[in-house]
Image (tube, rainbow, N blue to C red; front, side):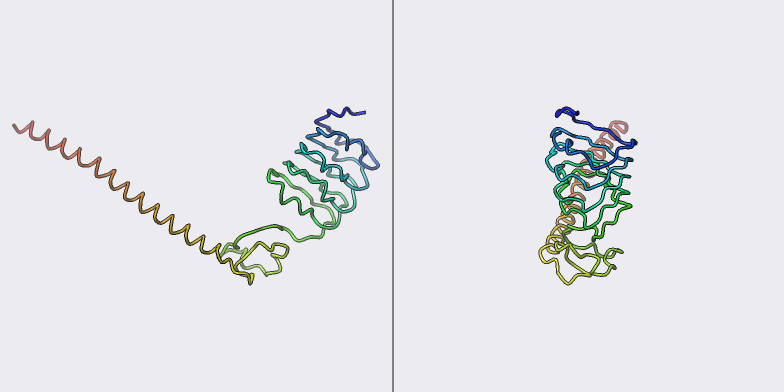
Length: 201
């Protein structure tokens, strides 16, 4: 039996089988859960959403099946690896909210979804991204600009304002550089003339 205070559970590279035990759901302080390279089957426990402290979830190379439960995503996740299982369906949209996520591996499953999703803002112009078919940007209603029919409106104005601000800042820097050069040059000339007078007198 694991104590409820367990923070790290490393159980990879064994011969564990059956479903992931529900006892895991009672470890509310769990930060790292690694059960990779076993023979676990069944679905991913929905109770993992209760783990506010969970940062690492590695379940790769098992026989887990079903849809990846939306409720299983902890917003504090930094590393999520469920590769090489039998997961199907769509990616959990709550992944968008995992702002600390650094590593994501879902390869070797049966997931059928559009990726990436949840993108916002203008599509970069003059790039290979813009040459994609508009259907490539499905499930991203926040995107705008070609090749989509939705214009960016205020976003383009904001970009123009940013460019104007950058130009103004550049001009100011040039003026400051010129002033600094003059300030450095004038004393040098005066000092040189003074020394010349001393030697000629």
